[in-house]
Length: 68
Image (cartoon, rainbow, N blue to C red; front, side):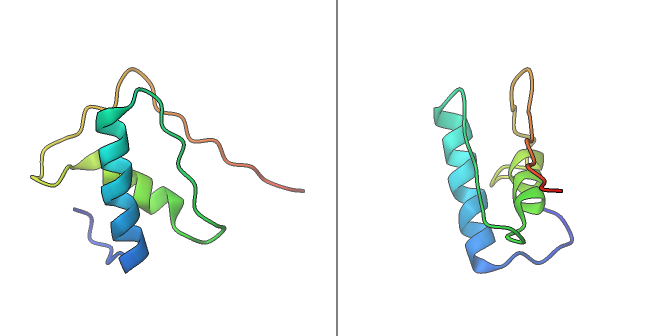
C-alpha cells in the first residue's frame, strides 16, 4: 500500500479495479476529474489485497484526455 490515505470511494474503486483485472483481459476504468484516477490505478496495480504484486499483463495504458 502507498503512504497516501485513500478516500472511501477510492478504496472501493481499488477493490473493483483489482477484481475486474483478475476476471477480464481488458478493463476500462473511469472517475470524474479530480477523483484520483492515477492514485487508484497505481494502488490497484502495485499490490493486491495480500500485498503481492499484481500481474497486469503485457501492457498497461493510461489514456488521459486534455482540453486546450
